Structure formats: structure tokens, C-alpha cells
Length: 308
Image (tube, rainbow, N blue to C red; front, side):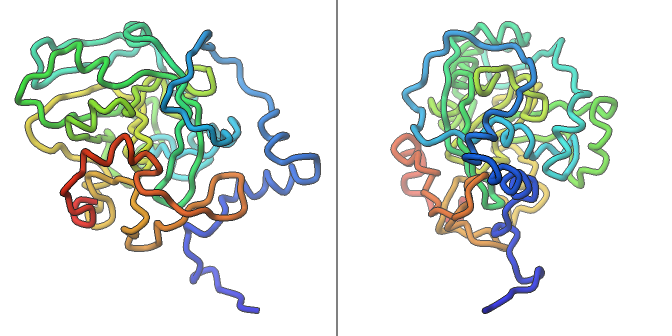
């Protein structure tokens, strides 16, 4: 029997420790995921009467406790379990989002305005993280295009730039993040206007927990997870391709587009397969994470190995 040393095992092949430990504990009961999803949830404000979006997948949802306890949010720590521990210091009221740049009517939206700007719906999206794991989450929100059209983009608007909150008092762990903060991201204008691009204010029928990007974030299901910027405070429409945090930090490994593509490996691991959190076996990764019918036309004629 071949036994590999820890140094020879790719990080993408390792089941997250928290999920592994929970799995061991839950397997002693009945069904592991059934028990997991029955764990107590914190009392949060709920959204009632949500319509389910036509873009929703019918795949089983990842348990709430997994999605809210295994997070990437470097402002609150670089370990996956740290954001849930430390994000309680984030103050989500009052909160405003400035939408500006190449627009006819720049505006500052209060979070309560954002909540009422368009009908909220539930969208159950698949997600693929660049590290090799995946989840299925019922988000709450509406298409980003709803807020963009309110500010009337001009013909000069070719890209959309996003910026997260960074406040050292609320986010003291941010000094150890190892990346430039505030976190920034960007989309091409047609990507931003695609109906799949979700301006998100909740999950599982509740408001967003702090560690998941409260009070408002992006959700881009055809791109790797780090493109879905959290805790947005500024949206700027611009003429030229804006910077994005991981592309700034390591452009060799993290491209601006970051579309899910099983044929383009990360330099340190394969992207051909993924492991759904809570599952043991891997599954093949789908091009554009399975959303090709909705987004592939935006990249027609592009070399997706060059524009990765």
C-alpha cells in the first residue's frame, strides 16, 4: 500500500479539518448531513415570502453550519474557522454603498434602500473555491444590474470595480492578512450586467452573517469564490480594467477573470475535480461551474488559458 508523506499531498486533496471532525462526530448518529443541518442556528432577521429564482440548482444544499463556519475572510483571520469567531466586531448598521464613476446619476445607497431596491429572491447556486472545495448555498438578493441601471452607466463604463470595508478597529486581524487591504475586485461590464451576477443580502432565508460578508456582497457562481467580494462599501464604474486583490498579490496564479475552468490548473494543484464540503468523494469540475448556458457567450473567441 502506498502511503504518501504529508508534503506530497496536495492541499486540494485534504478534507477540511472542521468538516472531518464534524463528520466523525455525526456519523455516530443517523445521517451525517441530516444531523448537521439540524444544529441550532443563531436568531437573525428573516426574509419572508421569497420567490425561488429560475437560476436555482436542484442539488442538495450544503448545511448552514458548514457555510457559516468555514469561511475565507482575511480581514477576520486567515484560518477558515477564524471569521466565525472574530467577525462579531463588524458593525453592519449604519451602512452605505457608494455607486459612482462613469455614470450619469451617482448615488449613495443606504443598506435599507438596497434591501427595497428590487424584489428579493432565493437563488440556490453552486460554488467552486480555487482551493478545490465546493458548496451549494441558497442566497438572497437580486441581480447587480438592478442597482447599476439606477445610476445610468455612460458609454465610457467598460468595467465595474468593487471595494470592501476595511476598518482596523473592527477588523484587528486584518494586519495579519498578508494581502493589501481594503479588498478590491472587478468585473467587465457585460459580466456585471449578466443576470447571474447577484447582489446578495442574505442566505438560507436569513440576513447575511458577518463572516459571510454582511450586510451586502457579490455572488458570482461561474467564477472562483474569491471573486465574490464581501462587505461592499463602494462600486465604481470605470473605463479600464480595475485591480483585483489576488491578481495584485500573485498574477501568475490568480487571473482577473478567474472563471471556473477544469482544463486550466492552478500552478500548485489541479482544478479538474472538486470535493463538496461534507462529502468524501470528489466529483468532476464543470466548465463555468455548470453555468455555461448563461455565461459562455461572453467569452466567445477568447483564449481562456491566457485570460484565466
